[in-house]
Amino acid sequence: MLKISNLKVAPAVGDAGLKKAAAKHLGISADAVSDVQILRRSIDARHKDDVSYVYTLAVSADGEAALLQSADGRISSYMPPEGYAFPYKALSAETRPVVVGLGPAGLFAALCLAEVGLPPIVLERGRPVEARVSDVKRFWETGALDMASNVQFGEGGAGTFSDGKLTTGVSDARIAYVLKRLVEFGAPADILYLAKPHIGTDRLQKLVPAMRKALIALGSDIRFEHQMTGLRFDGGQLREIEVSAPDGPYTLKTRHMILAPGNSARDTFEMLLRNGVQLSPKNFSVGVRIEHRQRDIDLAQYGKASTLGTLPASDYKLAVHLSGGRSVYTFCVCPGGRVVASASEAGGVVTNGMSHYARDGANINGGLLVTVTPEDFDNAPLSGIHFQRTLEQAAFKAGGGGYKAPAQRVADFLAQRASKKPGNVRPTYTPGVNWCNLWDVLPDFVCRAICEALPQMGRKIRGFDSADAVLTAVETRSSSPVCIAREAFEAVGHKGLFPCGEGAGYAGGIMSAAVDGIRAAEALCASL
Image (cartoon, rainbow, N blue to C red; front, side, top):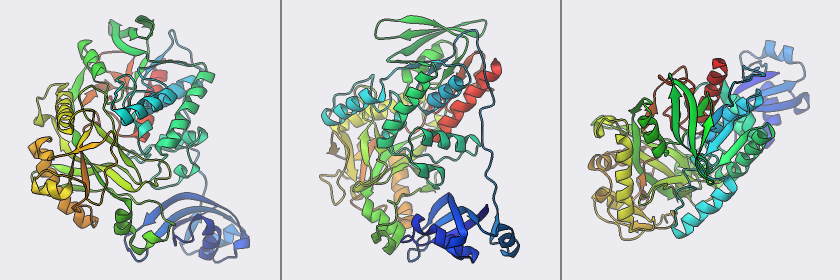
């Protein structure tokens, strides 16, 4: 096959016209091209009057050897990579391994173990997706929070109610493996080549149960509403797990456990600390969700091409470094999405973003976050959790109860005055918002950082700091405020305990969490 890189194609042509575009690039007829595979597709929107798709293609064509000789560097030969394969097979263990947590890290760790003959017992404190969707919908409609089943707790993890982004800063051979497996379980095939792949919450809610069924078929024992509440070690070796379940508590004997908690498993972190597991505070971020009309951001990003109807909903990724040394950045941007209530504790408001695969909603929202370091609070293992909780409770109070969220127009925020009503951007958060002054909710250093950053971001994307953009508070759960110390993937001083994923402090999204779960499964297998 031949590899063509940086092939620009007009949005009106798109994927459907690739065969002709590749043939033209090679200087041959379209009939001489037998197959075209997309290896990567991105969007070049640097010049608003010339927005284009940019492809890397693998092409099968007549006379490939001659084309390579005459191409003058325009093309190269292409051999599909072998790809990652889990490096263990047909293993056995003295006691059955346990996986705690059924988010991306736990799901992929369990899958790898099950496929090599070690089907685990999986403990998930929340409920299966089908029940969880109903519980979350009821919360959004009525403000009745179920602390056992919500956006944070349950099958699939917090990512189940998100945009399903699969972008990551991690460079790892396991990434292609994760993408391939996700497609097998129902993810759209375009995640294999898009520069910014996403699944969407609607498809995630079908994909996760498909993974569960595969795990059960391989012999895994998945136990919902079973929460790990204690651990027992003997001579530094894991021996037993204490579990709380609907039918009463019980003890589970095991020598190997993959711990994949979400970053909201605060009671789990407290239990680990009581059991002598080494935890340390880490940097995280807090802030708000910022919401614009999608069509305004499309116009700013694509120019006149935004009216063609052939480009996907635009997104953005912004970061500024401020004079005082802090950073403000956007996170988990949800094109065509909505801001969602994501609380897991009574009396606290937490926001997040969510969108469907189609990304066809009227608004776009993203986290607008300020970095927080242990120097901003008491530098104790769980002080970051206390810092988060204080902000969430302040947001609950400012929202007026019922899990309504405090909100403010950007113009009013910059002027430090309370908002009275929305402008042309209608907030999407349910159960609803209470217009107020966010300077009364957020720490002063967070407000000042966002104030300094907004005009700078507005210079990067026209209208980002528009007067009617809506700020909804508070976002506190973008990453874990703690890190579980580990060496070679085992908890320091606690043999048989393998912490991994976002909650353990080693990942920052669906993809990196899944990769970390696979690596934890590798470490467990190596220990056998």
